[in-house]
Amino acid sequence: FIFILFYLLCKEVHAFQQVRKKSSFRVRRRAEPERVEVCLNKHCKKRGSQRILNLFEALIQENSRYTQVCKADMSHTEHGCFDECTMGPNVRLNGIPQTDQGRVINNVKTPQDVANLLGIKITEDWTLPCSSEK
Image: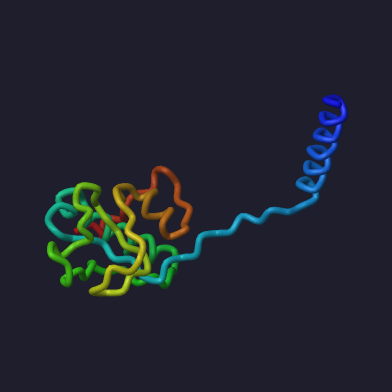
């Protein structure tokens, strides 16, 4: 009896593997965000959010993207930010000004982080152009 169960199980596994080989899985590319908001309030600014804003602007311009980049407008909240200060710099994707809608991404610190959020590939030695630094 156990032998029969083992045989049937092996047969099912083999059939599944054959179907899996025939299927073509497509990797969906993450859509480019339409709007990016960077928190420039006290805690995020201390952690380098102004540089992150400059990185977004430079990468978007360099790669001819149509993403809108701006300072986050969270004036409707108690602290005027995303209220995730300890995890900054914080960025919100596809948010609506003065609302809590949109996806907040924490700890955005490197050019690679910014490029990944925009769906852009950059080399590890990519640096911010001199004219973009403020």
